[in-house]
Amino acid sequence: MSGPFDVRSADVLIVGAGPAGLSAATRLRQLGVAKVIVVDREQQGGGIPRHCGHPPFGMREFGRVLTGPAYARKLVERAVHAGVDLQLGCSVVSIDCSDGDLVVACATNRGALTVTAKRIVIATGVRERPRSARLLGGDRPLGILNTGALQEYVYLERLAPFRRPLIVGTELVALSSLLTCRKIGARPVAMIEAGSHSTVRRASMALPRLLGVPVRYETEIVDIEGRRRVEAVTVRARDGRVDTIDCDGVLLTGCFRPEAALARTAGLEIDTGSGGPAIDQFARTSEPRIFAAGNVLHPVDTAGWSWREGRKVGEFVAQDLAGKLPDAKPAIKLTAGPGIRYVVPQRLVPGEGGFENLQLRADNDVSSGLVAYEGNALIRKQALSTGPERRILAPTSAFAGARGDVTISIDGEEKTSNRSGSECV
Image (spheres, helix red, strand yellow):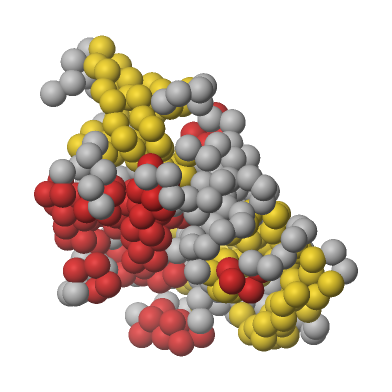
């Protein structure tokens, strides 16, 4: 147990005990890295899945279907069994990137903790955009939540915050919220979506139909009514028609942004497209002793994807400690061009290895192609049919021969989704 002024040393300090952080830590220990510490501000490890009381989790990691809490517990158990030092209820205050070891100041309910580490992995995940950032007007009654708050109420606090909510959004997390509502016997009055169709693939929208939840497209909130609690919501359709929907809650889903405050305070370069730290193909940030993994890099992917990426980043860090990674400089820059919201990684250094694929997101619906230019020279063209918030992969090897900065864009005919200005970007 740490004291009021505890000082520890580590080969690797990992910030964030979600799937990416715990996976990286476990892999580092499996590869023989002696001292691995994971810190997380929450009192329990496992990240967002511990709030999700429904399946499916764990097939890739454990070979069986689990609920979110069971999956989170197994991730923690595996890490602890591997010898990871897990420090919960521990918030990172600052990172000193001076020469020598990195010095990390933490605050716990037991006192101050200082960790000196050779390497750091930031795996702080994402957060949903709250009402204030969405510029939604109206009263300020109780009953306006995002999905994370709902899941915490239901699965951790055993509370039912509403019975007839209106759900805003059609991302994958919105479908998860339907299952959470079902858990407490709540019956959503409707789902609304600013776009002309769902963000998730069309087949996934069978779930609200099966649960009897009507879906309204090209619709957005213009006013929330209620004194003590939400009583009704005024919505406006694309054609200008205004309607009032009686409800006792508003559930704001999706619109994820990386939890990148720590990366910013550490002085790391932040990518304007993703909102997370910019990295090279080995997950090194602009401070090459600090790596990043999981949804802090690319909002938002599944727990299984983050787990797999964290495992890979653990391997990169082990290689770096052994002096086996190529130099972090020089590097070519990868830039998101027209039609592309972001590309991760944002830099490529000469050398073999690293992530097999670049990960990108499109701004709108696309049925054309992905193109990459080095200056005015076309170096890559890839057929593409996708929508916003869907993962796009492009092989990193296709860009290995570039000698100058590369811009990746959408080429050809582009079908726009006619999303309103209220769309989260």
